[in-house]
Image 1 (tube, chains in turn green, blue):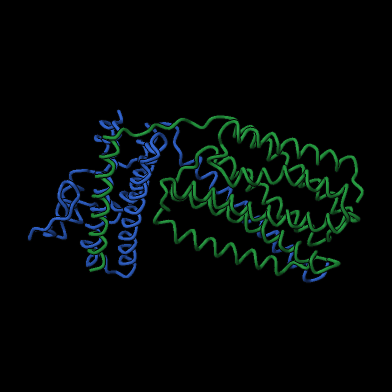
Image 2: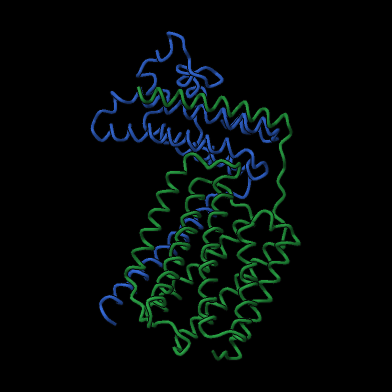
Length: 260
Length: 186
């Protein structure tokens, strides 16, 4: 496979920036709070090295299978990051917000349905069924992720759930990238995939440029500290706990009255 | 472009536009609804006669907000409930204020994340309040407002009363200096 100068430049920049982000995550101790996100960035670093070596020393088939295996792993990890963000926003005290569970499940179901619908409509001009499946799979994953990020944002704002700074920055970056990925995957489904197609090359460069912008955004955001939070004193905690117990009781009582 | 591709591209176009519009709407809503200062937040509260609210609520619950178990519970005259709450318009004001009460809990939550439990309870209370007001709006459309008003209105007021107690307790628990201002406003 022939790589142009710009391809190599994007590859090198992607590798260096992912490495930089990984250093920030570890050095600033963000990795403990965002294990899936750290795993995703680590995978991106490893993927660049592996694919470069496979390209140089392995066969065309070897590259094909390495590329798609890592792409599938990347998609799974991106969905795990979506879960990680949801759990940070909707269960900050290790319990899912009671009144949002059903809305969240409903939105998840709707997102899956819409993503399936869009994927079903796509008919990429592919040479093999594997190529067709992978193009459709990419479109499905991009559509689902962009929907999930928008749904999470809407639901949390509606319920006034706070977004801690770092969680919000990761979500914003991934959300914007997913939305752009939908357009790129639409291009792939429309024009087809293959390095012999000029449209494919242009779309790949756009995707890489967008990803580099996201990585820069994450490096800057995750380097900065979050606004410090105060911790309640034991006395305050006790008062809050008593209040919570009273509220639980009151609410049950009020509900039972409503049912009468 | 064949028909299938046309449908596909149209569907993607609609999909992306919808997502961008939803994201934009909620982004600007969050910016608009997050006041920069405590004073601004407090100013959003509509003035409501707290004595009237307390009188209606305390007919069903005691001062701590717990349900009364005595025989005289729920003995307030229906016409008095209407007068004290200010009718449906008064309840709509309570509904608007309930949103501000959640914002007040959210204000504390920015410094004390543990206050989330109270904010969540307030959201549930606000939903109950809305539910009662919606029942009354439905009754008004069917011409049954006079019959349904005392039952739902009093329960809506109880929800609001409890919300105010919860917010005050939260500010008290967190030793917030704004407690005095809040007590005056509520």
